Length: 165
View 1 (cartoon, rainbow, N blue to C red):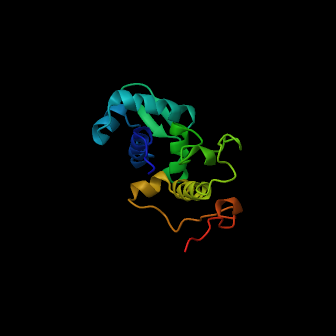
View 2 (view 1 turned 60 degrees about the vertical axis):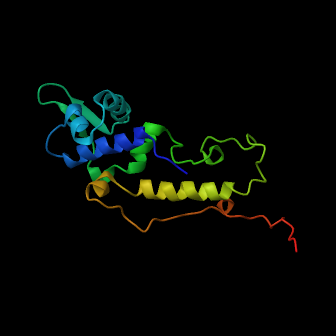
View 3 (view 1 turned 180 degrees about the vertical axis):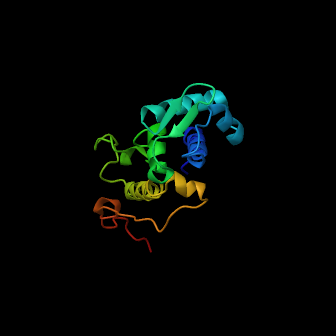
């Protein structure tokens, strides 16, 4: 079903290394690469959008490296994933993406699975948006998750399939 990209997976692993070192010292990318078994060249590509988004800052020099700009408890997994993947990172299908324009799909209005995918997205959003880097470093995730479903996420139509006997 849904699969997390290596970009998000490796990016979160790098961010947890920075979270573990928060308040102590900058961590070099080569150190993160060695500890997390992530190719250094790939890690260099990941840190750029994280830096532009203001989640990490870099220090040059012999004792340089990267550090989080906020405490780990204030950085959500959802924020990291959306920086790395885009605003619709948790949308399992196009029709529940934020930028989706009604009518782009020939099945709009009659698709019975769209409410399911909207609920899946809402559930994933609730989990990643309420889980912080600090939670990951503690080895757990908070719960229960506040799931808020809008009316269009529920099947509102009458069952139009005729019963066969």
